Length: 204
Image (cartoon, rainbow, N blue to C red; front, side, top):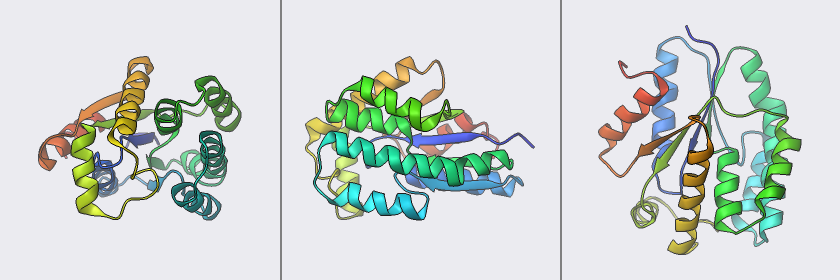
C-alpha cells in the first residue's frame, strides 16, 4: 500500500473533474486505501458557509481571494493536514491552482498578492499531484447548461473562461511536473483511462 498523497483535481467549470474524482476515490478504497474526498471552497462547516457567500454574493476580486483563502486555512487546519498525518490520501476538487486561474488570470488580480496569501495560509503545503482537466470553454459551457443552474462564476462570459484556461496553462508550465494535463474533450471512458494512468491506477 502506498503512502498518503494529496491529489487535487482542477479545471474550468464543466471540465468533468467531479465525476472522475469520485471514480478515483472508489478505486483507491477498493484497494484498501483510506481516502478523504473533499472540495474547495468548502470541506468544513465554516468553509462551506464561506463557499455559499463566494458563489452567490456579488464581490470584487480581492474579497473573492480572501474568502477562498480563509476557507482554505480552515480546510487545511481541520481536515486536510490531520487526514494526511493519519495516512489518509486526500482527493480535493480544486485547490490553490484554481485561485490563481480564476482570481488571478480570470479577474486579472495581482498574482503577487495571491502568492503572499498562499505563503501565509499554506505554510508550504502543496499537492503531490494535480490533474488539470483541460477542455475548450465552449464545450464546458454546453456541459454546464445541461447539468445545472449556473452560480455566479458559471454565468461569466466565455472570454472569462478563456482567461481562466490560460491561467491554468501558465500554472501547468511552471509546475515542474506536479500538474498533469488531462485532455477531457473526449468520451468519458477515454478520459477515465487517462486519469487512472496519471494517478498510477492504470491497471484498475
